[in-house]
Image 1 (cartoon, helix red, strand yellow):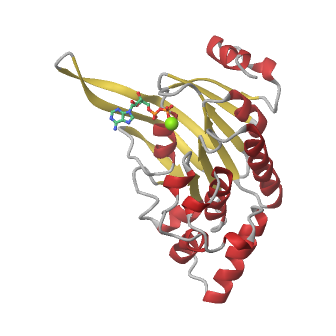
Image 2 (cartoon, rainbow, N blue to C red):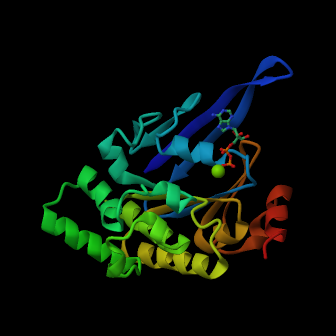
Length: 253
Ligand SMILES: Nc1ncnc2c1ncn2[C@@H]1O[C@H](COP(=O)(O)OP(=O)(O)O)[C@@H](O)[C@H]1O
Ligand SMILES: [Mg+2]
């Protein structure tokens, strides 16, 4: 469904008084198939967020193209293009900054529905309530603001927002980093269950090989702007051969 064709991103940076091109993402091709699960794993600074924002159409690549069902979406902000936004959603690390602090839980979840689905009031409310139930959020939080929720609850609101419009792909950028292990496991298991109910492709962007192995069938290992190894491992960690991948595997808890 979504394909990156030799995308790259470089930034002009000043080093020792001279401008040089810094390659945040080196020419990379990537395919996302309908309903499959992927991870992009690598240390901080390896270019994961840059690549995932390019995949979303949020950041224009320096070269290359992003095709959604064969049509270019490169650099066409998914925020502006409603058709793309309804198909590709993203969940970010910091639940608090991803949620507008002035919004209630109801309004946060209803926002993408209002922008993209435009349901009658009653249907909108039914959908918000059913999404909250699905994410195991009590209805008593309906009128709370983001700051009144725990980190795990904020994260579940963000996920409810992302799934509200039934996207074909959700990219989770360090979505469970910073949560304690029990909360993290709960959220990952909710996401697994969700994918069994409604077909949707997942891309987990993470520095954590544990999360990648737990969530994804196919893992892309990224280092210094390059994908150094891709393995359809389905949980089998012995299939990684690149020394950097082995290092990530060996550092797993
Ligand atoms: N706007 C920018 N200008 C210059 N350098 C940037 C910019 N955005 C990201 N970078 C650099 O690109 C590299 C990759 O960043 P990022 O994609 O955020 O990595 P990751 O998500 O893997 O931690 C980093 O070295 C970062 O400093
Ligand atoms: Mg990042």
